[in-house]
Image 1 (tube, rainbow, N blue to C red):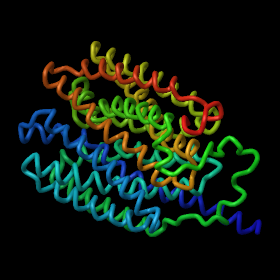
Image 2 (image 1 turned 30 degrees about the vertical axis):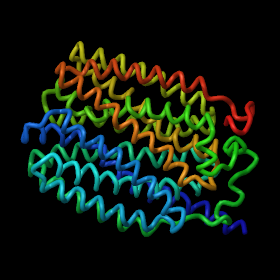
Image 3 (image 1 turned 45 degrees about the horizontal axis):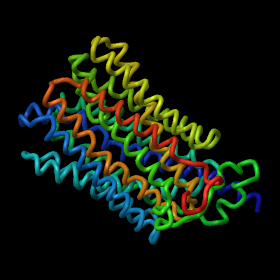
Image 4 (image 1 turned 135 degrees about the vertical axis):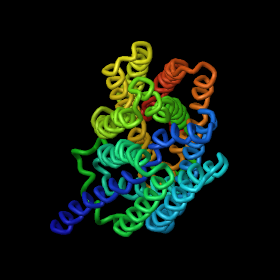
Length: 410
């Protein structure tokens, strides 16, 4: 028995590695800003219309996650993961042949975004079940892979665009990403009860959920909606800069490849931040974690304004590092909050529902894009991020400790 538990305990780390690699590929969706400038220059589109591609991809990402949550709960992760590989390939391959905005919206926005959503939820919903004692840490490591992807893909993509053009870059990425996700999807396994028995020990009491609620019951609680709004505000604030990271950096660097490298600072710190915030949730609880994310957003946004006004490269790098840490705190908190407040039994679907915050959040950065078109400056975007952070702060203060309220108010 002890030997079997040891094997299961070792196997779960293999599953975590496989899941992290897949999410590293799926996170390529966030490298959009690497392509946007080139497409705008070639086709003469406005920033607003081109950036809407990213908003569409965020919306379809959420829908894909919801569909995946339903499918994974019935069939396991392999079917949605294989479908993810096929759609990612199709979306990027077709993106390489576009000549109009509607075609780009369909290829990159709909197909690619939906495919990433399918794979994302299948991986998260499966791997987290292997770690009932370390939910925050496991979520953080998985999401670190998702977060640092834009650094790698952005850097490689910027170089490939300069050498072979954006069309071939899209095509080669589509082939490579599709193959990697397809092959690794066959290594995914849902843990049996015996695989995780004994992991939830007395020493890991803090990780026990407050309740086991299905999606219908979860949606009736006030805490869910307070948290949902918190996630919308901070996700939107993060997307405001993530979607413009390379282009804003280029206004200071005046070199696309250097700008993509600097934008990668967000990805690195995003990845590190996901592990840090995931661990913080396990050890310090939800309130400290959520408050810390808000505080970092405020500080990083103020420094972004300083970078904009001074044009100082060092200040730019510092601002990107801090905004990366701040944005990195949102996604592992989403995962850990749902597991802590509403349990593991219905986690896959509940997690896909909380991820719908990105659906709502994807609209809000369009306000920032409109401000950029109107003023020719990114400063309006940064002031807007401060407003979003203020609303998030109010939501944190409204969430109450479940043990001090009635079940219907949790």
